[in-house]
Image (cartoon, rainbow, N blue to C red; front, side):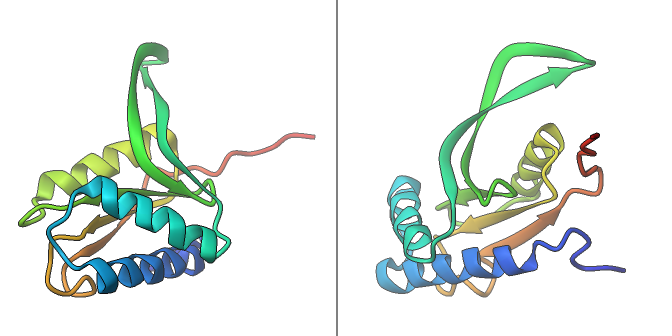
Length: 139
């Protein structure tokens, strides 16, 4: 099975590197908003483009709803990053990110829980959108 079907590994590795830097300095137990702000600082240092707290449309059976949901961060217009600072991730958290990937048609997302001893051991989950379809541009 292809582990990086959409060529996102270079971006996700850089994002994870930034998250590890933040966690190394701050440690666990703070609010998500603090980690978010520090990640934005690290993304700037790494020259990664990003948007924060992005409103995304919800389309239901072809109808665009008035309701929206918000993505914590979107890096390089490709990778949504969902931040948590909780005692333990549950399966529903991965499903939440997967729903966001489906609704935005983005290829891969990262779920990062900063409330762990070591971020690289259980704090980072990469979620792949099997329903992703690259947008075809017609000339």
